[in-house]
Image (cartoon, rainbow, N blue to C red):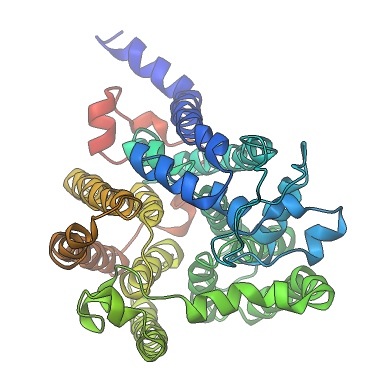
Length: 468
């Protein structure tokens, strides 16, 4: 037996377990880091002061406090309750988990409505900790699924995702691991549906349906998985798989109606709130904040600027998406779904009017599944932290008196430099993915494998740097 072979054999045998344990540990640590904020959630001002100072802000807790989900009044609230700024399925999850636990007798303050704080504030936490734990339980399950699937995708570098500090920071920040897992589930099911059948020679009906169901559910959890649905449709059109396209359209329409119609009929204003918020939301630190807002908060808050950004963002993302799809159509690659979906996703993030810090976990997913070079991974991690730290320092200063001048300097000068760095990174990733999209791949039967670990290195450092 050659020297080092036993260790290699052990790694191959326990590869999936090691990925799941490492990723699971980082997710749990992320959840534990953010959970204390649930005990500082009597009102948004208190939560902001605590979370910004401690770098523990996440989007899960503000959904409860900001939308006063302590007013849960029974199962009917799940379908007809207050509107949430997320698509239908995530809104339902948020309202449903708000109803579990001990309900506080006094409503929390809502900074949006301007309702004054009640004279007798509720005890710290209320049912917020239970609500947070339940949401994290859902995220944890889908996070493990995402890690498992990334490890099964041929050519991926799963350790880029699993051992990344970005997973530690953003696993508990939002629900993004759920649509990531659903997107990859759908893509893998649809890839296996046509595996070994040749160009346009049919599909496995059950896998085809399951794949389109996974993508549709992901879309109505968060919208980003739509890029992978578009990529699948482009692939199927290129292969002249018209029956598959018709089946996918039928599944998407039927399931979308099944998900959205009961909510719209039960409380249209609540269902429509998601669309209304994103139409009227001020532009945040993005390319449009610079080009149209001149890095001035007062400018980007104007309704005419918001309307212009909405229009331009839609046009640029749509036109660029069509151009990218046209390139994919001519690509020598046999399977274009994953690279096309990934480049469409990053292009969307580049020109979206909002770029939240947690969006970096989508970049992490793209880098891992597309086997990014190590230098690009390092650049992404560094850029993420360069963006994260000054952003939340600035947000903390907004909770302190007499810091207006510092915040103006921070938003117009320091963050401008960080914004340029992030835009340069996103452009670099788009170009790199474009080259991957136009590079010939392996034959279809070799695209997916049930185990590709036999070629993997045993060193974690090498595993991060080399394809799996």
